[in-house]
Image (cartoon, rainbow, N blue to C red; front, side, top):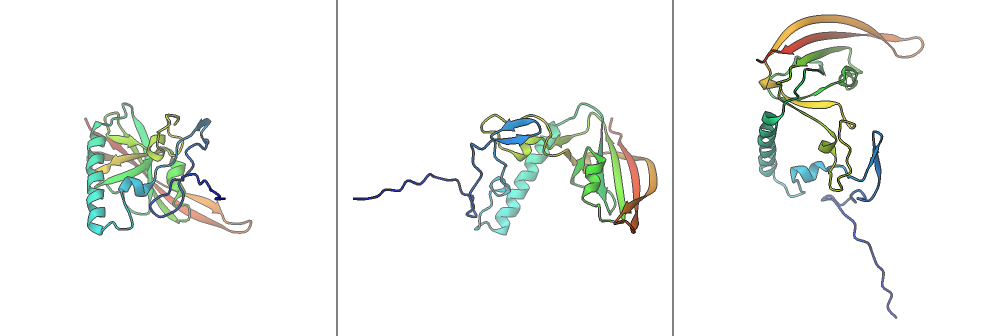
Length: 196
């Protein structure tokens, strides 16, 4: 008598680990959905055998696609976006800005001096919001609309015509423990995109 064992077929990614279950219900905000997270490796079309030249060519293709997409994207309303850094504002390439200043500062919470750039984008500014569809596939058509995963936007900084409107410096005390505290310096620069 032969025993037959049935195995269910599973999805595996290129590096051998099992992919997420497509039937699993996830929560995003107050909505339930059955979508899986997008894989960076699948989007970039990277395998173990990808050469440096192929990788660079793929990044150039993606940059061209971003250039086309961002030219079509307009917010249609004025919006304040924030960027935190320990260096000067980079206005020569793509950058990711946050709509919430607290979230912009989160990555630099251990730094003693932070530059916080408050950029007022006008309704004609070209930018792409990093909505839920950026992070998840929508194969089952159950993904909620909106920005539940992130409050960030992608902006081509080289297309902005920024004018410095205000500059402030303030210090905040951060408690380390009951007896110790340290002072942080935050330099706030308020810019406006003055495109016609």
